[in-house]
Image 1 (cartoon, rainbow, N blue to C red):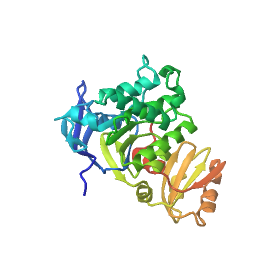
Image 2 (image 1 turned 60 degrees about the vertical axis):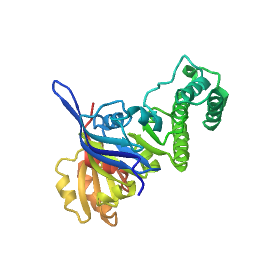
Image 3 (image 1 turned 90 degrees about the vertical axis):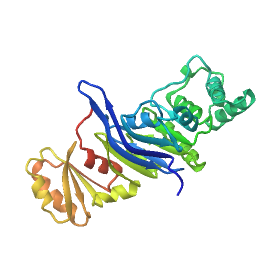
Image 4 (image 1 turned 90 degrees about the horizontal axis):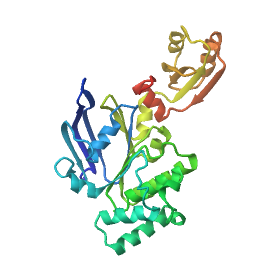
Length: 313
């Protein structure tokens, strides 16, 4: 088997206090060459710190991380030659034009002037930014700026690409365009690790995902496998005015796996919807039932089941 594109073993990161914060607590992960891997978790779960260590921006307290076979602590400069990074926030050079942002990035990575010009032109066309070449980056829309950041990140042809919340704040059209580019890069053999809060994004793009909370990996596997892991084939949302005392009655119905609170009432995870929905409706009628929705489990279902619903800072 090929060496992992990213190998994380026993990773620990403690930020000094007071009190000390254990942001990552013994994480083990392997990302295979050429796959798109999703890192999911609530705010403060440890995702950004894990990516920070992998991209050499954060020094680990314990454990080892290798990216493209290189130890990030022992040889960070060599790691940087093999990786591209698209941060959540805009880091484009506003003193340079769109074309210059790409050209000088290529020059930083040792390309000749001729090769850098050719690569910048090629990327502008590929990422549909050629009509903005001489414009300043501050004039770009959010979607265009993110496309330029992605183009810059792959300009030196990295083996591993890190995307931190790549579509946060983008409109649906820009999000879909970015998904297409990620799929193209994957088809070219680039390994992609992305963090995202969009469960649909992870489901569509990722070969495997890991759900992280409190600095630990809770589950890791293909999205379809994780959806099956909750033991339910149907999710029924009951929109209620009052759910007091209803949970035991619903849990007693045949086929019900478990019942969880939801923003609008209760969510019922069931082995099957056959003949169950009428029983759920009948049991809930005295609790101000005003809507019922039935769906298959999603990654969001798995995510909420594992991490809970409480808001995080």
